[in-house]
Amino acid sequence: MTNRRLNKILPAVKIAVLIGAGTHVVMVLLHSILTGEWWRLNAFALLQLDLLFPSIVEGTGWFIISYLFFTLLIGLIYFFGVLR
Image (cartoon, rainbow, N blue to C red; front, side, top):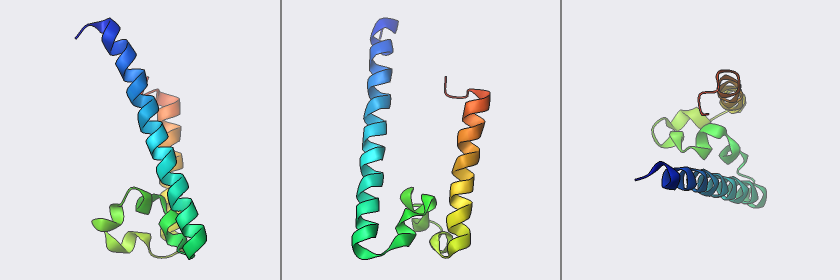
């Protein structure tokens, strides 16, 4: 595959993944509002890590830790430019 083609495909894949992830988060948010299952907004539950570690979505502590983890991850990516 040529560089020119790859340079067109990669941005398209990134956009498709972002749209899919955004849609997923909106659907989970709507589901949480309608059913009152607020634990589903836990970032670890969004990634379905609760399938491997069921207790990771229980309680406010894990909810806060999940978003602190993703804040740290975003900060690391921003400062070190891992995904450039």
